[in-house]
Length: 96
Image 1 (cartoon, rainbow, N blue to C red):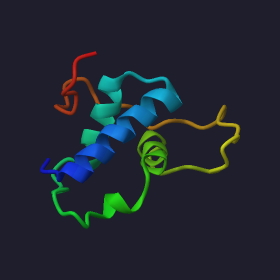
Image 2: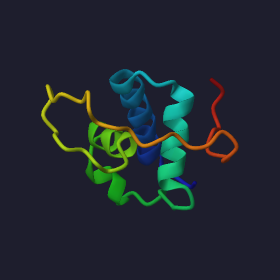
Image 3: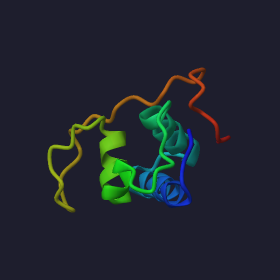
Image 4: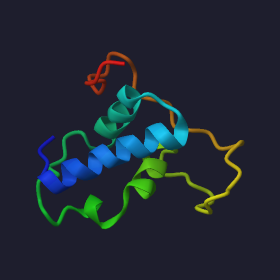
């Protein structure tokens, strides 16, 4: 997808946040990000995704938009993450 340098920086920070917050591989984080925004043009400097920080997007992407509690110490033991994209989906662009 087309990105601006600022958007690309945010996407990289989102992947880092997903790896540290959820313990998933970078490859899975990138695949989830690719699935989230495939087919969209993120090259505009006023892109909507730039209006939120990486923590927000990491949770939205990982839990499929269903984030019941944004508190830092929230008990996530019963939260179900959205399944990662299928292996042959084309979203997996980074090796494990």
